[in-house]
Length: 159
Image (cartoon, rainbow, N blue to C red):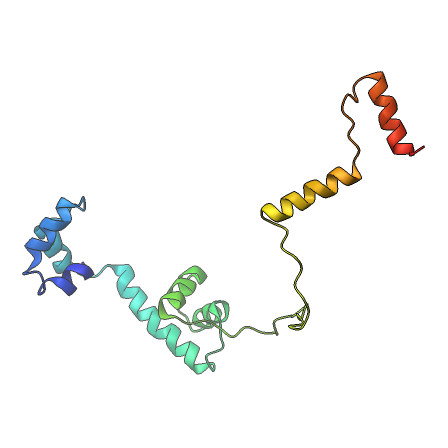
């Protein structure tokens, strides 16, 4: 509905917009648009508008530091029965957030002068790994046979 409201003057009314939307798989007819515009707001929308004003009032009265839980408790103390999840949702819609206590803990401070470790990925690193493996591990082809087992034992003992 917002899209149609914003663009109805630009595209020559509601009907051309609905025609293009129907061609692209968004089935909306002009009568549906006009019916939705004429429909009164829901009870939830009315209550949300009232609660938003109360939430903003409590938030401002408490130095803009209260979070959803404290605002929820304050509203219930004032006699407004409201669920905490509703307060959380409405605070998100209003863009309100309580103050966060504490400092961010920094565990590591990097030294900009220190050199970086070499890159361990890519073709150069893979060939270096193959070379290092070939030097450290002897070729033990045929280790499944008795002769192969003896050569593996000989390589391990280093005799």
